[in-house]
Length: 153
Image 1 (cartoon, rainbow, N blue to C red):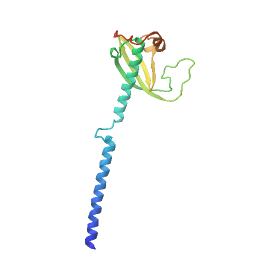
Image 2: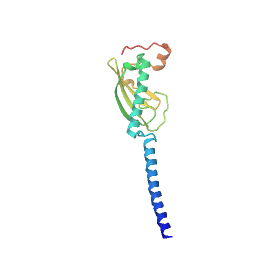
Image 3: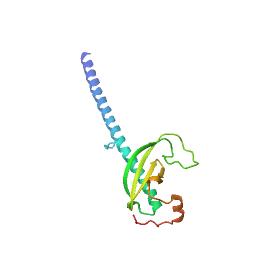
Image 4: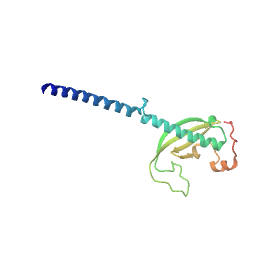
């Protein structure tokens, strides 16, 4: 009987170590997404979101100026929090949700002209006071047909 208890004790010890090893493997996989590559940290995620904001601003300016996106240089991207969804650029007569809105101030350069954008999620607004003149996006889309983008910046 004493031999049997000793043997059971060894199995319990082994199973305890196996359980710990299994837990560590599971923890490692959850930290790496299971594929061995690290899950993006909050800093990497913020960087990705900032690049997406810059891409949205570049796409908007490209359409407005009728230039290729490659002709536009991203001069700066700064995180910013606005007190509402107007992104600091309210239009008269419009109502905006009064919630803190996190986004980015994106500074672009094209043909030695500076354009400042406020971007949060899908909201992309050009700051007219800190930018060279740009045509309104809706008017430009009506006037221009497909294939009219040039490389003039």
